[in-house]
Image (cartoon, rainbow, N blue to C red; front, side, top):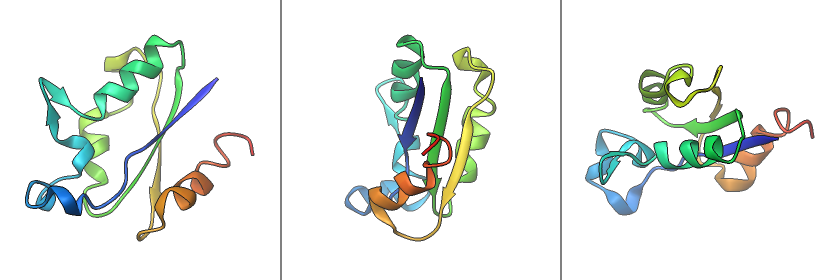
Length: 100
């Protein structure tokens, strides 16, 4: 089984917090928000994960999450969403990962 995490968007409603980072990298309690869906998928036995992100802060996901070993994964897959395509566009980018 595979898991897809949509971590794009500009976070305009959270401005100015999102002026310098992606909203999914902001801390919620004691860890970045992106950790929660990753940990939930891993706890459910899903170890093939794709993160769809975009914007000027996309590289921060790679710096923070690396290859996913800290979550017990062999790797994390990433794809980049150009512009503001929304959820449908993000899922289109994940189509290859989900084998159609």
